[in-house]
Length: 509
Image (cartoon, rainbow, N blue to C red; front, side, top):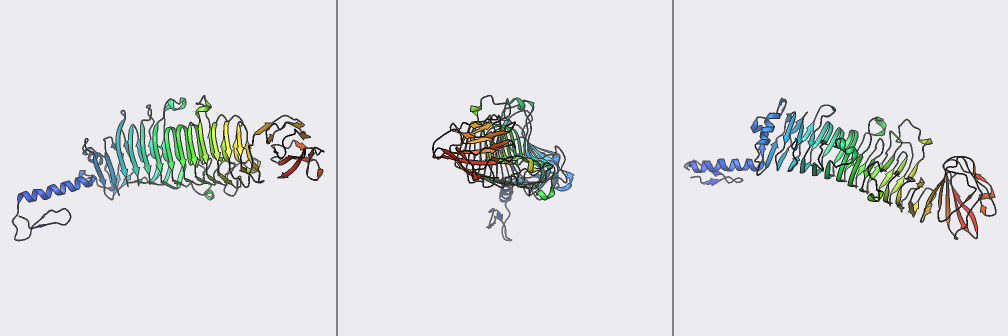
Protein backbone atom coordinates (compact mmCIF):
# COMPACT_ATOMS: atom_id res chain seq x y z
CA UNK A 1 0.00 0.00 0.00
CA UNK A 2 1.21 3.54 -0.74
CA UNK A 3 1.97 5.65 2.29
CA UNK A 4 1.78 9.05 0.58
CA UNK A 5 -0.24 11.06 -1.97
CA UNK A 6 0.98 13.60 -4.53
CA UNK A 7 0.00 17.18 -3.79
CA UNK A 8 -1.97 18.03 -6.97
CA UNK A 9 -3.75 14.96 -8.31
CA UNK A 10 -3.55 13.02 -5.00
CA UNK A 11 -2.04 10.05 -6.79
CA UNK A 12 -0.61 7.10 -4.94
CA UNK A 13 3.05 7.61 -4.03
CA UNK A 14 5.23 4.76 -2.81
CA UNK A 15 8.39 4.91 -0.69
CA UNK A 16 10.92 2.12 -0.37
CA UNK A 17 9.15 0.38 2.47
CA UNK A 18 5.73 0.34 0.74
CA UNK A 19 4.30 -2.64 -1.08
CA UNK A 20 2.98 -2.10 -4.60
CA UNK A 21 -0.72 -2.60 -5.20
CA UNK A 22 -2.18 -3.25 -8.67
CA UNK A 23 -5.36 -1.50 -7.63
CA UNK A 24 -3.44 1.64 -6.67
CA UNK A 25 -1.49 1.59 -9.94
CA UNK A 26 -4.79 1.40 -11.85
CA UNK A 27 -6.14 4.28 -9.76
CA UNK A 28 -3.15 6.39 -10.81
CA UNK A 29 -3.71 5.67 -14.50
CA UNK A 30 -7.41 6.49 -14.19
CA UNK A 31 -6.60 9.83 -12.56
CA UNK A 32 -4.10 10.67 -15.29
CA UNK A 33 -6.60 9.73 -17.99
CA UNK A 34 -9.34 11.80 -16.37
CA UNK A 35 -7.04 14.78 -15.96
CA UNK A 36 -6.05 14.76 -19.62
CA UNK A 37 -9.67 14.26 -20.59
CA UNK A 38 -10.67 17.33 -18.62
CA UNK A 39 -7.88 19.38 -20.14
CA UNK A 40 -8.72 18.24 -23.66
CA UNK A 41 -7.58 15.90 -26.36
CA UNK A 42 -4.11 16.73 -27.63
CA UNK A 43 -3.86 16.70 -31.43
CA UNK A 44 -0.37 15.23 -31.11
CA UNK A 45 -1.83 12.06 -29.59
CA UNK A 46 -3.28 11.36 -33.03
CA UNK A 47 -0.07 11.96 -34.93
CA UNK A 48 -0.03 15.71 -35.58
CA UNK A 49 3.54 16.98 -35.76
CA UNK A 50 3.18 20.75 -35.66
CA UNK A 51 6.50 21.13 -37.48
CA UNK A 52 5.22 23.38 -40.28
CA UNK A 53 6.14 20.77 -42.90
CA UNK A 54 4.03 17.65 -42.29
CA UNK A 55 0.41 17.74 -43.45
CA UNK A 56 -1.45 17.42 -40.13
CA UNK A 57 -4.97 17.58 -41.59
CA UNK A 58 -5.86 13.91 -41.14
CA UNK A 59 -4.45 13.70 -37.61
CA UNK A 60 -6.33 16.80 -36.44
CA UNK A 61 -9.60 15.66 -37.98
CA UNK A 62 -9.17 12.31 -36.20
CA UNK A 63 -8.63 14.11 -32.92
CA UNK A 64 -11.82 16.14 -33.42
CA UNK A 65 -13.77 13.02 -34.42
CA UNK A 66 -12.71 11.32 -31.20
CA UNK A 67 -14.68 13.84 -29.12
CA UNK A 68 -17.81 12.26 -27.66
CA UNK A 69 -20.78 13.24 -29.85
CA UNK A 70 -23.08 13.18 -26.83
CA UNK A 71 -20.90 14.98 -24.28
CA UNK A 72 -18.64 17.18 -26.39
CA UNK A 73 -15.11 18.08 -25.35
CA UNK A 74 -11.96 20.08 -25.97
CA UNK A 75 -9.20 19.61 -28.53
CA UNK A 76 -5.87 21.14 -27.59
CA UNK A 77 -3.28 22.52 -30.02
CA UNK A 78 0.05 22.85 -28.19
CA UNK A 79 2.63 25.31 -29.51
CA UNK A 80 3.62 24.45 -33.07
CA UNK A 81 2.82 25.10 -36.71
CA UNK A 82 0.11 22.75 -37.98
CA UNK A 83 0.11 22.67 -41.76
CA UNK A 84 -3.40 21.78 -42.91
CA UNK A 85 -5.82 21.98 -45.83
CA UNK A 86 -9.32 21.77 -44.29
CA UNK A 87 -10.19 21.01 -40.67
CA UNK A 88 -13.82 19.96 -40.25
CA UNK A 89 -15.88 20.85 -37.20
CA UNK A 90 -19.38 19.38 -37.41
CA UNK A 91 -19.94 17.87 -33.95
CA UNK A 92 -21.72 19.62 -31.12
CA UNK A 93 -19.99 21.22 -28.10
CA UNK A 94 -16.43 21.01 -29.45
CA UNK A 95 -13.87 23.48 -28.13
CA UNK A 96 -10.71 24.03 -30.21
CA UNK A 97 -8.07 25.87 -28.24
CA UNK A 98 -4.37 26.30 -27.57
CA UNK A 99 -1.36 28.40 -28.53
CA UNK A 100 -0.69 26.54 -31.76
CA UNK A 101 -0.72 28.02 -35.26
CA UNK A 102 -2.95 26.78 -38.07
CA UNK A 103 -0.77 27.10 -41.17
CA UNK A 104 -2.09 27.69 -44.71
CA UNK A 105 -5.48 25.98 -44.38
CA UNK A 106 -8.82 26.70 -42.73
CA UNK A 107 -11.34 25.41 -40.22
CA UNK A 108 -14.78 24.75 -41.72
CA UNK A 109 -17.53 24.88 -39.11
CA UNK A 110 -20.87 23.26 -39.92
CA UNK A 111 -22.37 20.59 -42.13
CA UNK A 112 -22.58 21.03 -45.88
CA UNK A 113 -26.36 20.42 -46.00
CA UNK A 114 -27.98 20.42 -42.56
CA UNK A 115 -28.33 23.30 -40.08
CA UNK A 116 -27.30 22.36 -36.51
CA UNK A 117 -26.94 24.01 -33.12
CA UNK A 118 -23.23 23.35 -32.62
CA UNK A 119 -22.28 25.46 -29.58
CA UNK A 120 -18.73 25.46 -30.94
CA UNK A 121 -15.77 27.43 -29.57
CA UNK A 122 -12.51 28.41 -31.25
CA UNK A 123 -10.12 30.03 -28.78
CA UNK A 124 -6.59 31.35 -28.76
CA UNK A 125 -5.35 29.90 -32.04
CA UNK A 126 -3.20 31.73 -34.56
CA UNK A 127 -4.04 31.45 -38.25
CA UNK A 128 -1.23 32.18 -40.65
CA UNK A 129 -0.41 32.15 -44.33
CA UNK A 130 2.73 33.58 -45.85
CA UNK A 131 0.84 35.62 -48.46
CA UNK A 132 -2.76 36.56 -49.25
CA UNK A 133 -4.48 34.54 -51.98
CA UNK A 134 -8.07 34.84 -53.18
CA UNK A 135 -10.55 32.48 -51.46
CA UNK A 136 -7.96 31.29 -48.96
CA UNK A 137 -9.85 31.87 -45.72
CA UNK A 138 -9.08 31.09 -42.08
CA UNK A 139 -12.49 30.12 -40.63
CA UNK A 140 -15.52 29.33 -42.77
CA UNK A 141 -19.03 29.05 -41.31
CA UNK A 142 -22.02 27.28 -42.83
CA UNK A 143 -25.27 25.93 -41.36
CA UNK A 144 -23.81 26.50 -37.89
CA UNK A 145 -25.77 28.05 -35.06
CA UNK A 146 -24.43 29.09 -31.67
CA UNK A 147 -20.70 29.54 -31.32
CA UNK A 148 -17.77 31.70 -30.26
CA UNK A 149 -14.53 32.76 -31.92
CA UNK A 150 -12.31 34.61 -29.48
CA UNK A 151 -8.71 35.55 -28.65
CA UNK A 152 -7.46 34.40 -32.06
CA UNK A 153 -4.88 36.07 -34.30
CA UNK A 154 -4.94 36.20 -38.11
CA UNK A 155 -2.21 36.79 -40.71
CA UNK A 156 -2.49 36.96 -44.52
CA UNK A 157 -5.93 35.56 -45.34
CA UNK A 158 -8.40 36.66 -47.98
CA UNK A 159 -11.32 36.55 -45.52
CA UNK A 160 -10.38 35.79 -41.94
CA UNK A 161 -13.92 34.75 -40.97
CA UNK A 162 -16.14 33.88 -43.92
CA UNK A 163 -19.84 32.97 -43.91
CA UNK A 164 -20.51 30.77 -46.92
CA UNK A 165 -23.58 31.43 -49.12
CA UNK A 166 -26.44 29.02 -48.44
CA UNK A 167 -30.08 29.14 -49.64
CA UNK A 168 -31.41 28.93 -46.06
CA UNK A 169 -32.80 31.68 -43.84
CA UNK A 170 -30.22 32.51 -41.14
CA UNK A 171 -28.27 29.32 -41.78
CA UNK A 172 -25.57 30.65 -39.43
CA UNK A 173 -26.61 32.57 -36.35
CA UNK A 174 -25.89 33.51 -32.73
CA UNK A 175 -22.13 33.70 -33.18
CA UNK A 176 -19.97 35.86 -30.90
CA UNK A 177 -16.67 37.05 -32.40
CA UNK A 178 -14.63 38.86 -29.78
CA UNK A 179 -11.15 39.96 -28.70
CA UNK A 180 -9.41 38.84 -31.88
CA UNK A 181 -6.53 40.56 -33.66
CA UNK A 182 -6.46 40.84 -37.46
CA UNK A 183 -3.01 41.75 -38.74
CA UNK A 184 -3.28 41.39 -42.51
CA UNK A 185 -6.16 40.32 -44.75
CA UNK A 186 -8.54 41.50 -47.42
CA UNK A 187 -11.51 41.27 -45.01
CA UNK A 188 -11.87 40.54 -41.29
CA UNK A 189 -15.49 39.36 -41.49
CA UNK A 190 -17.22 38.62 -44.80
CA UNK A 191 -20.88 37.55 -44.81
CA UNK A 192 -21.72 36.11 -48.22
CA UNK A 193 -25.04 35.30 -49.85
CA UNK A 194 -26.20 33.49 -52.98
CA UNK A 195 -28.11 34.99 -55.90
CA UNK A 196 -31.41 35.13 -53.99
CA UNK A 197 -29.86 37.86 -51.85
CA UNK A 198 -30.49 40.35 -54.65
CA UNK A 199 -34.26 39.86 -54.39
CA UNK A 200 -34.17 40.03 -50.60
CA UNK A 201 -35.74 36.63 -50.01
CA UNK A 202 -33.80 35.80 -46.86
CA UNK A 203 -30.95 36.78 -44.57
CA UNK A 204 -27.72 34.76 -44.48
CA UNK A 205 -26.98 35.30 -40.79
CA UNK A 206 -28.79 36.22 -37.63
CA UNK A 207 -27.71 37.68 -34.30
CA UNK A 208 -23.98 38.04 -34.88
CA UNK A 209 -21.84 40.04 -32.45
CA UNK A 210 -18.45 41.45 -33.45
CA UNK A 211 -17.07 42.95 -30.26
CA UNK A 212 -13.75 44.32 -28.95
CA UNK A 213 -11.65 43.20 -31.90
CA UNK A 214 -8.67 45.02 -33.36
CA UNK A 215 -7.65 45.24 -37.00
CA UNK A 216 -4.21 46.58 -37.78
CA UNK A 217 -3.30 48.59 -40.85
CA UNK A 218 -2.84 45.54 -43.10
CA UNK A 219 -6.52 45.27 -44.14
CA UNK A 220 -6.84 45.76 -47.90
CA UNK A 221 -10.57 46.17 -48.65
CA UNK A 222 -13.08 46.25 -45.77
CA UNK A 223 -13.12 45.26 -42.13
CA UNK A 224 -16.72 44.04 -42.23
CA UNK A 225 -18.65 43.32 -45.41
CA UNK A 226 -22.07 41.72 -45.23
CA UNK A 227 -24.91 40.75 -47.56
CA UNK A 228 -28.14 39.78 -45.83
CA UNK A 229 -27.98 40.16 -42.04
CA UNK A 230 -30.75 39.95 -39.45
CA UNK A 231 -29.21 41.15 -36.22
CA UNK A 232 -25.62 42.40 -36.17
CA UNK A 233 -23.89 44.19 -33.30
CA UNK A 234 -20.53 45.81 -34.07
CA UNK A 235 -19.26 47.28 -30.81
CA UNK A 236 -16.04 48.46 -29.20
CA UNK A 237 -13.75 47.58 -32.12
CA UNK A 238 -10.73 49.48 -33.42
CA UNK A 239 -10.34 49.29 -37.19
CA UNK A 240 -7.23 50.68 -38.86
CA UNK A 241 -6.40 51.04 -42.52
CA UNK A 242 -2.96 51.94 -43.80
CA UNK A 243 -2.05 55.60 -43.38
CA UNK A 244 -2.84 58.16 -46.06
CA UNK A 245 0.90 58.50 -46.62
CA UNK A 246 0.94 55.01 -48.18
CA UNK A 247 -1.66 56.09 -50.79
CA UNK A 248 -3.27 52.65 -50.69
CA UNK A 249 -5.35 52.13 -53.86
CA UNK A 250 -7.60 49.28 -52.62
CA UNK A 251 -9.02 50.25 -49.24
CA UNK A 252 -12.76 50.83 -49.14
CA UNK A 253 -15.09 50.89 -46.11
CA UNK A 254 -14.66 50.05 -42.46
CA UNK A 255 -18.21 48.62 -42.43
CA UNK A 256 -20.40 47.87 -45.46
CA UNK A 257 -23.76 46.12 -44.99
CA UNK A 258 -26.25 45.57 -47.83
CA UNK A 259 -29.78 44.32 -46.96
CA UNK A 260 -30.50 43.74 -43.31
CA UNK A 261 -32.41 44.40 -40.15
CA UNK A 262 -31.40 45.39 -36.61
CA UNK A 263 -27.85 46.56 -37.33
CA UNK A 264 -26.16 48.29 -34.38
CA UNK A 265 -22.77 49.99 -34.81
CA UNK A 266 -21.73 51.36 -31.44
CA UNK A 267 -18.58 52.76 -29.86
CA UNK A 268 -16.04 51.85 -32.53
CA UNK A 269 -12.87 53.62 -33.68
CA UNK A 270 -12.99 53.65 -37.49
CA UNK A 271 -9.82 55.05 -39.02
CA UNK A 272 -8.79 56.20 -42.50
CA UNK A 273 -11.37 54.59 -44.81
CA UNK A 274 -10.69 54.87 -48.51
CA UNK A 275 -14.36 55.66 -49.22
CA UNK A 276 -17.23 55.69 -46.69
CA UNK A 277 -16.39 54.61 -43.16
CA UNK A 278 -19.92 53.20 -42.73
CA UNK A 279 -22.30 52.45 -45.58
CA UNK A 280 -25.70 50.85 -44.99
CA UNK A 281 -27.98 49.90 -47.89
CA UNK A 282 -31.50 48.50 -47.60
CA UNK A 283 -31.42 48.33 -43.80
CA UNK A 284 -34.75 48.34 -41.96
CA UNK A 285 -33.72 49.14 -38.38
CA UNK A 286 -30.31 50.54 -37.45
CA UNK A 287 -28.38 52.41 -34.78
CA UNK A 288 -25.06 54.19 -35.40
CA UNK A 289 -23.89 55.73 -32.15
CA UNK A 290 -20.82 56.92 -30.24
CA UNK A 291 -18.33 56.07 -32.97
CA UNK A 292 -15.09 57.95 -33.59
CA UNK A 293 -14.59 58.37 -37.36
CA UNK A 294 -11.50 60.31 -38.50
CA UNK A 295 -10.17 60.84 -42.05
CA UNK A 296 -12.67 58.93 -44.20
CA UNK A 297 -12.88 59.18 -47.98
CA UNK A 298 -9.14 59.30 -48.56
CA UNK A 299 -9.23 57.65 -52.01
CA UNK A 300 -12.61 58.84 -53.28
CA UNK A 301 -14.56 61.88 -52.02
CA UNK A 302 -17.15 60.23 -49.77
CA UNK A 303 -19.35 60.81 -46.75
CA UNK A 304 -18.20 59.32 -43.46
CA UNK A 305 -21.65 57.74 -42.92
CA UNK A 306 -23.91 56.92 -45.86
CA UNK A 307 -27.47 55.57 -45.60
CA UNK A 308 -28.99 54.33 -48.86
CA UNK A 309 -32.39 52.82 -49.47
CA UNK A 310 -31.61 50.51 -52.37
CA UNK A 311 -34.33 48.71 -54.32
CA UNK A 312 -36.02 46.18 -52.01
CA UNK A 313 -38.20 48.11 -49.58
CA UNK A 314 -41.47 49.23 -51.12
CA UNK A 315 -42.80 50.92 -47.97
CA UNK A 316 -40.52 53.54 -46.49
CA UNK A 317 -42.48 53.49 -43.24
CA UNK A 318 -40.83 50.13 -42.52
CA UNK A 319 -37.46 51.87 -42.16
CA UNK A 320 -36.25 53.35 -38.89
CA UNK A 321 -32.81 54.54 -37.84
CA UNK A 322 -30.82 56.59 -35.35
CA UNK A 323 -27.45 58.29 -35.95
CA UNK A 324 -26.29 59.96 -32.75
CA UNK A 325 -23.32 61.07 -30.67
CA UNK A 326 -20.70 60.28 -33.29
CA UNK A 327 -17.50 62.28 -33.69
CA UNK A 328 -16.58 62.71 -37.35
CA UNK A 329 -13.33 64.41 -38.29
CA UNK A 330 -11.93 65.29 -41.74
CA UNK A 331 -14.44 63.56 -44.03
CA UNK A 332 -13.39 64.37 -47.58
CA UNK A 333 -16.91 65.26 -48.74
CA UNK A 334 -19.76 65.02 -46.20
CA UNK A 335 -20.12 63.94 -42.60
CA UNK A 336 -23.49 62.16 -42.85
CA UNK A 337 -25.42 61.54 -46.07
CA UNK A 338 -29.05 60.39 -46.05
CA UNK A 339 -29.90 59.17 -49.53
CA UNK A 340 -33.07 59.13 -51.60
CA UNK A 341 -35.98 56.97 -50.49
CA UNK A 342 -34.95 56.79 -46.84
CA UNK A 343 -37.33 57.53 -43.99
CA UNK A 344 -37.82 57.81 -40.23
CA UNK A 345 -34.24 58.65 -39.26
CA UNK A 346 -33.12 60.70 -36.27
CA UNK A 347 -29.73 62.45 -36.58
CA UNK A 348 -28.71 64.07 -33.33
CA UNK A 349 -25.81 65.25 -31.18
CA UNK A 350 -23.08 64.50 -33.71
CA UNK A 351 -19.89 66.56 -33.90
CA UNK A 352 -18.60 66.98 -37.45
CA UNK A 353 -15.40 68.94 -37.99
CA UNK A 354 -12.97 69.89 -40.77
CA UNK A 355 -15.25 68.78 -43.60
CA UNK A 356 -13.47 68.68 -46.95
CA UNK A 357 -9.98 69.46 -45.71
CA UNK A 358 -7.45 67.80 -47.97
CA UNK A 359 -4.54 67.00 -45.67
CA UNK A 360 -5.38 63.25 -45.62
CA UNK A 361 -6.89 63.03 -49.11
CA UNK A 362 -4.92 61.59 -52.05
CA UNK A 363 -7.63 60.83 -54.63
CA UNK A 364 -7.64 61.90 -58.25
CA UNK A 365 -10.70 64.18 -58.04
CA UNK A 366 -10.13 67.70 -56.80
CA UNK A 367 -11.98 68.45 -53.58
CA UNK A 368 -12.32 72.12 -54.48
CA UNK A 369 -15.08 71.44 -57.03
CA UNK A 370 -17.10 69.09 -54.82
CA UNK A 371 -20.05 70.14 -52.65
CA UNK A 372 -19.30 69.49 -49.01
CA UNK A 373 -21.70 69.43 -46.09
CA UNK A 374 -21.75 68.41 -42.47
CA UNK A 375 -25.08 66.64 -43.04
CA UNK A 376 -26.79 66.17 -46.40
CA UNK A 377 -30.38 64.92 -46.64
CA UNK A 378 -31.65 64.19 -50.15
CA UNK A 379 -34.92 65.58 -51.46
CA UNK A 380 -37.03 62.38 -51.64
CA UNK A 381 -36.41 61.35 -48.02
CA UNK A 382 -39.24 61.40 -45.45
CA UNK A 383 -39.51 62.05 -41.73
CA UNK A 384 -35.87 62.98 -41.19
CA UNK A 385 -35.11 64.77 -37.91
CA UNK A 386 -31.81 66.65 -37.57
CA UNK A 387 -31.25 67.99 -34.07
CA UNK A 388 -28.48 69.37 -31.86
CA UNK A 389 -25.58 68.68 -34.20
CA UNK A 390 -22.40 70.75 -34.21
CA UNK A 391 -20.46 71.48 -37.40
CA UNK A 392 -18.16 74.45 -36.68
CA UNK A 393 -16.60 74.67 -40.15
CA UNK A 394 -19.37 73.52 -42.48
CA UNK A 395 -23.00 73.94 -43.51
CA UNK A 396 -26.05 71.67 -43.85
CA UNK A 397 -28.04 70.70 -46.94
CA UNK A 398 -31.42 69.53 -45.64
CA UNK A 399 -34.02 68.77 -48.27
CA UNK A 400 -37.09 66.57 -48.50
CA UNK A 401 -39.36 66.06 -45.50
CA UNK A 402 -36.74 67.17 -42.99
CA UNK A 403 -37.09 68.99 -39.68
CA UNK A 404 -34.06 70.62 -38.07
CA UNK A 405 -33.61 72.07 -34.60
CA UNK A 406 -30.66 73.62 -32.77
CA UNK A 407 -27.91 72.74 -35.24
CA UNK A 408 -24.75 74.87 -35.27
CA UNK A 409 -22.93 75.50 -38.54
CA UNK A 410 -19.81 77.50 -39.39
CA UNK A 411 -21.75 80.76 -39.27
CA UNK A 412 -22.98 80.06 -35.78
CA UNK A 413 -26.43 79.46 -37.24
CA UNK A 414 -28.80 77.97 -34.67
CA UNK A 415 -31.64 76.57 -36.77
CA UNK A 416 -34.99 76.16 -35.02
CA UNK A 417 -37.79 74.21 -36.66
CA UNK A 418 -35.86 74.47 -39.89
CA UNK A 419 -37.66 73.42 -43.04
CA UNK A 420 -35.75 73.60 -46.30
CA UNK A 421 -36.97 74.21 -49.82
CA UNK A 422 -35.03 73.79 -53.05
CA UNK A 423 -35.72 76.28 -55.85
CA UNK A 424 -34.58 75.67 -59.42
CA UNK A 425 -36.65 78.28 -61.30
CA UNK A 426 -36.14 82.06 -61.21
CA UNK A 427 -38.67 83.82 -58.94
CA UNK A 428 -37.99 87.44 -57.92
CA UNK A 429 -40.09 87.15 -54.78
CA UNK A 430 -39.81 84.27 -52.30
CA UNK A 431 -42.75 83.06 -50.23
CA UNK A 432 -41.38 82.21 -46.79
CA UNK A 433 -44.55 80.36 -45.68
CA UNK A 434 -43.01 78.71 -42.60
CA UNK A 435 -39.73 77.84 -44.33
CA UNK A 436 -36.38 79.18 -43.20
CA UNK A 437 -33.79 77.78 -45.58
CA UNK A 438 -33.80 78.03 -49.35
CA UNK A 439 -31.32 76.13 -51.53
CA UNK A 440 -31.16 77.92 -54.87
CA UNK A 441 -30.25 76.21 -58.15
CA UNK A 442 -31.65 78.69 -60.73
CA UNK A 443 -31.03 77.73 -64.35
CA UNK A 444 -30.77 81.41 -65.33
CA UNK A 445 -29.97 84.64 -63.50
CA UNK A 446 -32.24 85.03 -60.48
CA UNK A 447 -32.59 88.46 -58.80
CA UNK A 448 -34.34 88.33 -55.44
CA UNK A 449 -36.21 91.55 -54.64
CA UNK A 450 -38.10 90.51 -51.53
CA UNK A 451 -39.59 87.95 -49.15
CA UNK A 452 -43.13 87.59 -47.87
CA UNK A 453 -43.88 89.02 -44.43
CA UNK A 454 -43.70 86.74 -41.41
CA UNK A 455 -43.48 87.02 -37.62
CA UNK A 456 -40.92 89.33 -36.00
CA UNK A 457 -37.62 87.61 -35.30
CA UNK A 458 -38.01 84.94 -37.96
CA UNK A 459 -34.80 84.16 -39.84
CA UNK A 460 -34.23 82.92 -43.38
CA UNK A 461 -31.04 81.49 -44.85
CA UNK A 462 -30.29 81.59 -48.58
CA UNK A 463 -27.66 79.21 -50.02
CA UNK A 464 -26.62 79.52 -53.66
CA UNK A 465 -25.48 76.37 -55.46
CA UNK A 466 -24.35 78.13 -58.62
CA UNK A 467 -23.38 81.65 -59.69
CA UNK A 468 -26.83 82.75 -60.89
CA UNK A 469 -28.20 84.30 -57.66
CA UNK A 470 -28.41 88.05 -57.06
CA UNK A 471 -30.17 89.98 -54.29
CA UNK A 472 -31.42 93.56 -54.78
CA UNK A 473 -31.34 96.04 -51.93
CA UNK A 474 -34.65 97.83 -51.30
CA UNK A 475 -36.62 99.60 -48.60
CA UNK A 476 -38.12 96.23 -47.59
CA UNK A 477 -34.97 94.09 -48.07
CA UNK A 478 -32.01 95.84 -46.52
CA UNK A 479 -28.54 94.56 -47.37
CA UNK A 480 -25.22 95.39 -45.77
CA UNK A 481 -24.11 98.89 -46.86
CA UNK A 482 -27.43 99.10 -48.76
CA UNK A 483 -25.65 97.56 -51.74
CA UNK A 484 -26.85 94.87 -54.14
CA UNK A 485 -24.98 91.57 -53.94
CA UNK A 486 -24.23 88.54 -56.13
CA UNK A 487 -23.82 85.27 -54.28
CA UNK A 488 -20.89 83.08 -55.29
CA UNK A 489 -21.31 79.34 -55.61
CA UNK A 490 -21.95 77.92 -52.12
CA UNK A 491 -22.45 81.46 -50.84
CA UNK A 492 -24.72 81.81 -47.81
CA UNK A 493 -26.60 84.87 -46.61
CA UNK A 494 -28.94 85.17 -43.65
CA UNK A 495 -31.83 87.60 -43.05
CA UNK A 496 -34.05 88.42 -40.05
CA UNK A 497 -37.57 89.92 -40.19
CA UNK A 498 -38.19 92.76 -37.75
CA UNK A 499 -40.19 96.03 -37.71
CA UNK A 500 -41.86 94.97 -40.95
CA UNK A 501 -38.61 94.64 -42.91
CA UNK A 502 -35.96 92.04 -43.77
CA UNK A 503 -32.43 92.88 -42.59
CA UNK A 504 -29.22 91.09 -43.54
CA UNK A 505 -27.70 89.38 -40.49
CA UNK A 506 -24.59 87.68 -41.89
CA UNK A 507 -22.95 86.24 -44.99
CA UNK A 508 -20.08 83.80 -45.56
CA UNK A 509 -18.54 85.42 -48.63
